Image 1 (tube, rainbow, N blue to C red):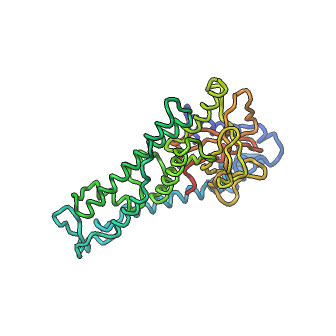
Image 2 (cartoon, helix red, strand yellow):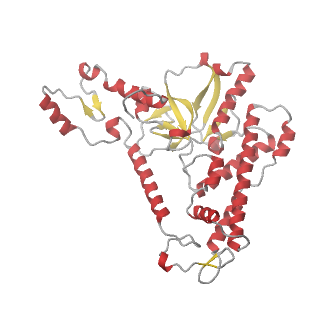
Image 3 (cartoon, rainbow, N blue to C red):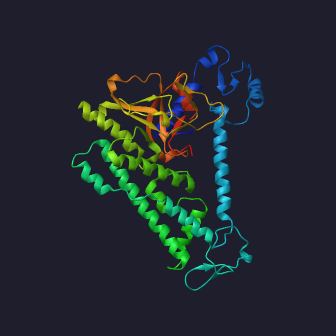
Length: 397
């Protein structure tokens, strides 16, 4: 974003400096021919104001990603997001049958309140679709993890990794308990065992609209996933935590998407290394090496650091042959290969040929920033800054 006044946001400042370095550049005038003033438009050798104005009218194309040195696919991503939001809004404002949750003509609705707190249709039967949906979701709620047994086996001294996984177990247990309680209440209301309240109606409406209920979302954190995809992620998180609870060892490859607080695990890598080397934490930093493997190909623990996966890449792709960032050609938001994340003293880190790539929780970015990882590049980092290249943890689903 280019704007007047002081820039206080870190990433806004970096982007503004990249544009200024591109535009306020003597090479645009004195350098070799072919320098672009904007994406796809070279500097013309006009001799008068009239010629310059004519060039602007004839040569400058409509505003789009290319003009701002971005990937053409970035507009596709933005348009797809706008379309998704538009159709979701249309669905939300459609009149719904209070009992079935399907769109209906309000005048033709024959829903009646039976006096016992249950909405009934013409036949007086409770909607089987809603009951089946709630039964399916109840079956998907993870069983409580045995955190008490885990505490007994961990003892008084826990490693940074054990702290993180134990806290994740507690968070998942709390979320599972809230999910199960709300689903049981909705099921009881549909059966007529308790009064159907407005809160329960809104809860059922969220479920039928494939939306994550707000109380569940408050415990998990921001996500763009629909309810069905999110429940699959919760199942993956339960599998990862159950595996850890069995032997109290990190998985061979850790799925960062399955964490309530993913930065906690990355910080644990730093803390663990600092403790082993007896070094101050602020003198260490994370280093990333991207492998050529997918998670299923990881059969051993990393010799140093941890294997992690989950983020996808927007604004670029990862070239496994050249082992560096590359221009997007046909699809944006592709998953990254498994990465080795380890921690080294600052004095031993060379990031001169790397792009400082921010990692965000969702495609909306803004307040979902997690951390910054340095990825190899063969072009100046400013190229990826202008393309808005970033890792998205909740992007591919």
